[in-house]
Amino acid sequence: MIKYTSAGDSHGEALVGILENVPAHIAVDIKRINAMLSLRQRGYGRGKRMQIEKDKVRIISGVTEKFSDSGTGESLQPENLQPENLLLETSGAPIGMLIENRDYTLNKTKRFFTVVRPGHSDFAGTVKFAFENAAIPSERTSARTTAMDVAAGALLLSYLELFGIEVYFFAERIGSVRAEGALEKGKLTKEAFEYALKNDLLVPPSGDYAAMKAEVDRAISQRDSIGGSGVVVVKGVPPGVGHYGNFLDKLDGIIAHFVMSVPSVKSVEVGTLSDAFLQDGFTGSAFHDALFIENGKLTRRTNNAGGIEGGLSNGEDIVIRVGFKPIPTVLKGVPSVDLSDFSEKRSVYVRSDTCVVPAGTVVSAMRVSLALSTVLSEQFGGDSAADVKANFEGWLSRRRKFWQR
Image (tube, rainbow, N blue to C red; front, side, top):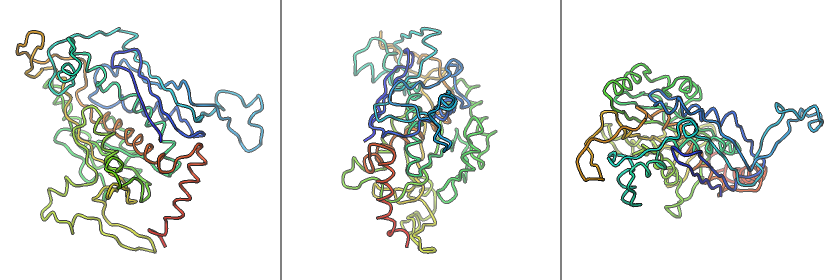
């Protein structure tokens, strides 16, 4: 099973990530990984730290060169061994990744404070490890560390493509402004996703960019922070992925675990349950996604379940709504306590963002990529991309009769 481990602190020298058990011959798209890292940094309302960092992943192990071949059989000729002709693929060995923290190189930032920030890990982390410096626990729980999560998840997008799976995402709500109608019957079109990628709030076509931007600007003017929600949509997962035998193996539970642990995330919802609560007559007959047969294929006309039933995928788009709290570091501070002398004070300000919804949505989407990759690798694992593809296609051929005849 694919396993991901990371290390590194917000103000340390670098972030480090290791992906284990990734099959050989999976394409490694450095440009896509770096584009996703750039997207994480780009969101409107980000702080000055993002003006310092220029995140680029450096892969230090677990990949090998694959020479392009036009079909002439001459790909190994000297004239073809030029950098622009070299592609990368996984070797089957553990993949080591590194992202440097330029802030460490430029500023050698050292932090010490004893007034804890409500909402951050300062207080609880100080208690757990008996620190005198409340800044230490926040080094590892800072959102900065999620840059490596994005790199790992983006690398594994190529693994998901073996199964015909794509991951889309967008910002649904910022403050009190919501992009209504972004999902059509629980689905998101590729066009809507690509539209969202073109603006710095990840707003889909149905959203009001100006109104969402105004929410961020209002928080800035008030020396405050603001939260919201994002949506991740996974397309192409066939029915039957996951497990119902043990609650630890349920697909929705695994996804929720990976996403809930993203900094600032306080809620993870699969499907449209919160929307349904607002409707009159919230009943099972109205909520559950009825089954029909159209042209010899099992279909559904709604996707309220969000693509998962009983801990398994049901063939519909997997829809995950992620709720982000306003970040706990705010310019005007909030009432708190100084642990050094046990006196009441206002929380300290540490360089931070105003709104993390767009960036947090990118991180959540790449955490979903990680989660799905672990599940799929356990169910259809193999030593090489060809092995995985053969295992998956063989399984599909034996199962397709249940949804298409």
